[in-house]
Image 1 (cartoon, rainbow, N blue to C red):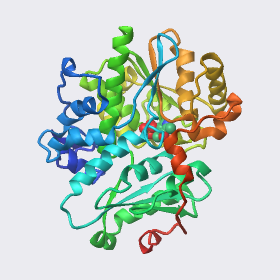
Image 2 (image 1 turned 90 degrees about the vertical axis):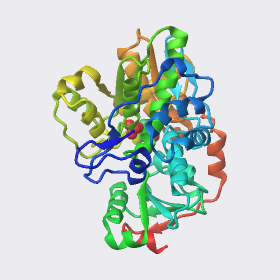
Image 3 (image 1 turned 60 degrees about the vertical axis):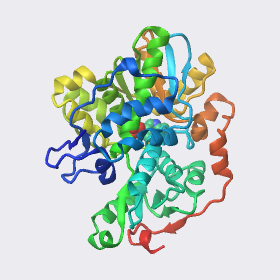
Amino acid sequence: MEFISTRGNSPSVSASVAIRTGLAPDGGLYVPSKFPEIEVQGLNTDNYASFASEIIQPFFEGDPLFNDIPDICRDAFSFDVPLSWLNDRQAVLELFHGPTAAFKDFGARFLANVMERAQKGKDKKLTILVATSGDTGSAVASAFYGKEGIDVKVLYPEGRVSKRQEMQLTCWNDNISAYCVKGSFDDCQKMVKTAFQDRDLALEWELSSANSINLGRLLPQIVYFYYSSLIYLGKTGRKPVVIIPSGNVGNSVGAYWAAELGAPVGKIILAVNSNKTIPEFIGTGKYSPRPSVATIANAMDVGDPSNMERLRHLFPEHEQVRANMKAFSVSDDIIRETIRKTYIDFSYIECPHTAAGEWVRQNYYNDEFTMVVSTAHPAKFETVVEPEIGASVEIPESLKGMMEAGSEFHKIPPVMDELFSN
Ligand SMILES: *Cc1c(COP(=O)(O)O)cnc(C)c1O
């Protein structure tokens, strides 16, 4: 099974090469050259990890890691992936039962297990650089913690992440180092970019990234759409309209690729916050990235979604975009109101990102068979959620552990060299 670049000027590679490389040499993103055939009759939803292996392994056909995929999936996906039903038609797919309580755990844990096995027998340590404004950094840190032969450097902007988020970034040690950068998130990203372009550094360090364009984060995001839509179909006899809170659209690419594989998903709908690049693109056919706007659903504060290139590769004509994509923008006020209303109507507590999806459901698809994707546990965003519901949100055990552990980080100016001097 081969992966090609969206820009068409790089040699095709197998899955583990695409994962280790991150970006294709021509600057494009890796996509499957074609989608494998998966027999839906052979799929069994009793065990999530083995289901995941059934879906992912065909993508590793001919790859050295092919035989490792069942073990990798077992190690990576060791938590629940439940559907919560608000009524007999409206489900919430809860993707927040992993160690850091956001869907990023699926991609990060799969990536870490693949990289650890691909690293076996290599002399040189692999160093992963990751700039984060929130959920990605903690998922990557947690996933790579204790992995042989791999170090991780997590960069976050001073004063721009919440107290709870900072604790989840800085509670590690051993092979994980946290850098509190005196600058913005853009400064952090720039430092990572500079490091990747530095030739002297490349002689001494083997660097890799774990950001959301990495194929290793996308493949596992196909699985839960396939899995949950089969369960949904089994229960209701209908394919669900799937509503996805979106930022860099990595999660949405997972849904579209699941549909390509034959998963019984109905329409796929994106919910975004006040960052409107995607709805405007669908409306006009012109892609105009712009600086991001800060919102209370901050994991979706993206003005130039990095995975759009994959969706535009899948739907090269504007007609195809219009036929297959739909997106709605949701303001902070509406998100707040929806958190409150969903709590009152269903006694169900949602994070701000999920609430954006919930509003799209309640306003446009309320009479249809629907599944809203819940991307994070509400306890991660308690400062937004608790005032709306007038109650405190219980913290999942794994988060509690991270918040009780000590905190350790290097405080550095926004200069790339500082990352490699301590
Ligand atoms: C990352 C994230 C998103 C956005 O997902 P994309 O794949 O970037 O579209 C939404 N909600 C939460 C909680 C996230 O952490």
